[in-house]
Length: 104
Image (cartoon, rainbow, N blue to C red; front, top):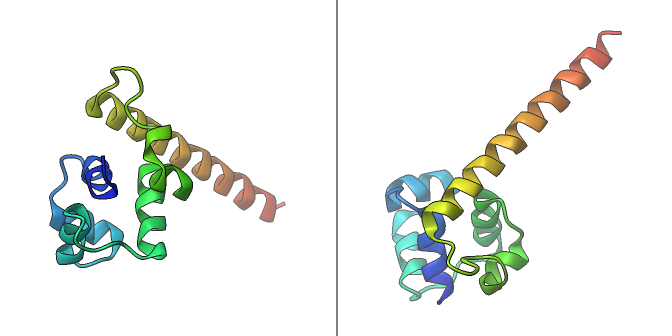
């Protein structure tokens, strides 16, 4: 599987326009990445990895983390969604603690 194939899987059911907007890139560029006619720059790859909740290393070596022993994209997407929610919850808790600390 190529980097473009993994980017498509990370995009999931979002349209190319939606996903490119989230990443802050042109949809034309995203399509070229997915078709492997153009390689994303390091900043774009970092944005994709951040969106997926993985490291940049995981993105460029996807065989290490994706679809182990029969796992499918739906299961993986659910896992990523859960992890994003957990991260958002922890960030919110941390921000609230910082705000409370400033008001003491």
